[in-house]
Amino acid sequence: MLRRLVQGETPPTQAMSIVERLAGSPYANPRVRSGGPDASARKTLDLALSMAETMFRYGAGALEVETAMIAVTAAYGLDNIEVDITNQSVLLNYSPKDQTPITVMRVVRSWTNNYAGLALVHRLVTDIVDGNVSRPEAAQQLNAIVHQPKPFPRWAVTFSAGLFAAAIVAFIGSGPLGSAVAFFSTILVSLLQRLLGRWRVPDFFTTAASGFLVTALAMLFWALDATDSLDLNIAPGIVVAGGILLLLPTGRLVSAVQDAINGFPVTAAGRFLSAFLTFAAIVAGIAVALVMGALVGMPRLEVTEVASSQYPFAVTVLILAVALATISITEQSPMNLILPTVLIGVGGFLVGSLSEAVGVGPRLTPAVAAIAIGMAARIVALRMGAPQLVIAVPAVLFLFPGLSIFRSMYGLSIGLDDVSGGVIGLFNALTVILAIAGGVVFGDNLARPLTRNLNGNDRRNRRR
Image (cartoon, rainbow, N blue to C red; front, side, top):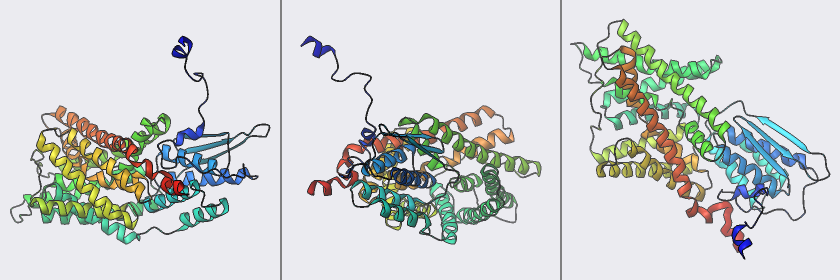
């Protein structure tokens, strides 16, 4: 009896079965084919790698990619599988007993906004886990998903990006003219990014040029407003804040925090580095535009004003709904998930407003709203056959502190009396950004007990 009390039930060095990694994921309890391992294991490995590459390209996190690969190989009867994901490379090792091991690797070198394709791959993996799709059929469906056009054409994405900037600027606190400036500047930024992408310019310089263009146009209209002949009433800080929200690496930050929490430190470090390089490019573009404006004699900006919506509360909520719908189109979300994204984002805004009224504080309020959005996004997304990231990332974008970033860079670039205030403001903005990303991941984990019946269509398997 004493020995049983002191010793554990299993040896501490016993290896954990890799299929146990599926616990708590949308692909838990896969239906393994009764015929045993497939005679052509290499085709199954290639299928799993192709799915992993597609999910990575469309913005999935490392844990979701790993669980998808394990679920697919287990469903097709392959044991003794090891998966290793390092930043942008995926390695899959199959070493059956008394046979020659097979190791295959794939490197993901490109990314694209296609949440609709990510949702389709998620459904395909779920069907494979349920045992409804054979391997040749799965390969054909995956090929069809890769070659399927995105749900929205390029012109619609560009126009939606402009509408998002206009709506978010109105939501922050600008008037109709400021929204119009944000709309046209974002359209120009989209065209500039397309041109620089055609010239194979690195993403860092493309993002820096975009931040420069947004800031320069806002300062140009501010200079016209400062003249006696025009009265435009434009707040350049708010216009820039709305313009740079689309440039922020929201999806990569959320995925990086998720990877760090779920035990992928190397992948998380790579994504954090990529995200902070993008952030540095935005900051560099803003700084260059501010310094050039000061050199040509533009009047000093007023960046200490407190921004708040100029519209009634009901109109503000409607404006936020427009912003959420348009950012979903920009991220190429599925058509059936646009309305749930809007409702969840508005719900997160109401939770944040209530938290601010209670006195939670300006730094924790975005995190509380992100937790609520992360929980609701997991429940709704899994019920509708999509990963949580597809709804959560567009729904939290309005929480990011674009205005704080601009104010901090203005203090650092122009050389105001209190330069330390700019450094502290930039640090606070980074803290809030990481708190939002962490809140989304925390909400995703809080909702796991509520989504057990949604994992892999378990209810249908029980009926069978």
